[in-house]
Length: 570
Picture 1 (cartoon, rainbow, N blue to C red):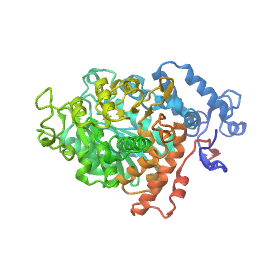
Picture 2 (picture 1 turned 90 degrees about the vertical axis):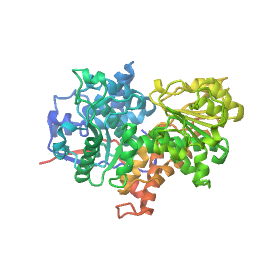
Picture 3 (picture 1 turned 135 degrees about the horizontal axis):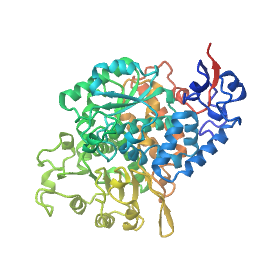
């Protein structure tokens, strides 16, 4: 398989691992097991003769065999399970198959299939991966973390399962998300899998089906809340800082009431970020930047409607506003460009019980009070499009089919190429079918989605639909953070990542192209993002490393899946 950069030399020298494991114990250690690729000498040395078929396979043969097995499964959940079992058995081979066929396997490593798996997690559970920290065992938290054999963990993804994708509370099934995210850190960011740790904070569940299910594997009591919850999280953060003081902690899929407060409370306490807020915002910003470059326009000429005023929607709005300021707009002018529609309709400054985080984006009521509306006191998205005439429409509401033909046709009446992103996951929750958006706009809409979408053919023109997937951002950001050992994650890092990614958009060369590059290019792009992030950390005085060359830092961090040389530890 071709190396994706530095093709003129081998950047992946074989490392040497000493182990006292032998026989079945070695075959059941995913990072050391190489299955049928063990050589005769290794089979002699580690007592493997008779425990494996006699044929010695090359890596290429193993990849072909596993790919054919993958293709033999017709159901998405079965493809997911096949890949999961491969990862639990032979981790190096899993990542080589995933790299070779990343376009095919990504939907079954992560979205949308990971959401399906989270719903039936208790029924699918087999091999353990990661750590479960139960509120019921909070007094043993440090002992639980001491049970983790990994002494050198560089990246943790943690969830409490309260808001998984657009599926809501799936309880302990939320563990599929940290596992999947960290697989992508390794696949595209090159973070060594032995230095990653998925964590599930089991604080109960409010899902009545799970509470009544005798096979449910989590704690069967309602979710803790208030001070109990806050104290538990504080205890968790302090325990992590004690066990892994230089780790990168990624908050993932926490409910709206906790996501932003946790980010704000701990972003300066532990090196951490929230991917649903910052990662989603950065990848959406990248897509918007690429679309504007395509149509040769600037933010000063745009108005932006966002359906969904939760953590994801506000995160996107904040990063776009920051990009507007970098373009020279004042803070007031930037915020005036947004029309955020939530459950109570358009957010304006006279709206009662408005979320404090939404207030800076609230439209002055004096600007909207004379709009003709169907329901007094409630301004709908359709009425926003009719009156405000936004050029950009983003959906993070998890409310399906809320972008209508009438809305799209209206947008096309005042802007030639409307930018429309139905970003909610999974596919069943997206605000519009991308095929409809293309046809309603007569092929002119610039579309990206949150879940994978097929290429659409419109009047003999093939229009690929880019997936606005956080995987384009967080592996590279994480790589730069880990390489530089930065003490804090700043918004500037995500803004830079968005700009780097936008520069690689295919739509810049083809106006009907995708907003996002091919996944096969992502490992190289993640490296470029990582170098920029490390550079920012060094310039801001946040890096805890002696080396000041960000390129060397990143290249010395990247792991490529290959079988190490094994030696007997005596």
